[in-house]
Length: 117
Image 1 (cartoon, rainbow, N blue to C red):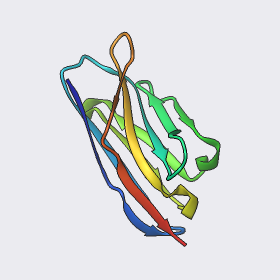
Image 2 (cartoon, rainbow, N blue to C red):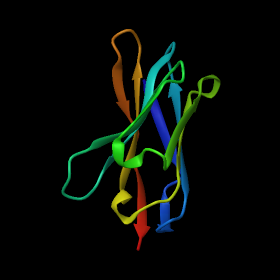
Image 3 (cartoon, helix red, strand yellow):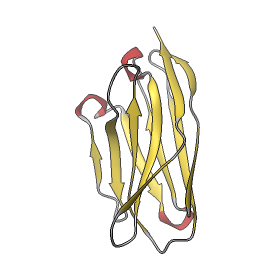
C-alpha cells in the first residue's frame, strides 16, 4: 500500500506564505506524477499544480507566478511553496501521486489552508 503524509497547512494573512509538504511511503518502484489539488467549501476539487518525475511542472492559471511546486525524487516528497496568498486560496489541499505503469492514483488526507483578509 501507499501512504501520503501531508504537512504545512495553517492560517495565514493575505499576502503571506505557506509551504506544504507531502511524503510518499510504502511499496512502489517509482512515482510518475505528484501534485496538489484543493477543494473549497461548496466547490469541486481542482488541480493546483503537478510535476513529473523529470521536473516538468504544470499550474492552474490563478496560482501561476505565486505558487511553486517542486519534488525530491530521492525522498519521494513533493512541496508546494505558496506566496502572495489570497483569501480565495482558502481550501483543503490534497496531495496526489500517480504510481506504477498504470498510474494508479493515491491521495493524502488533506491539509487545511486558511487565508484571512
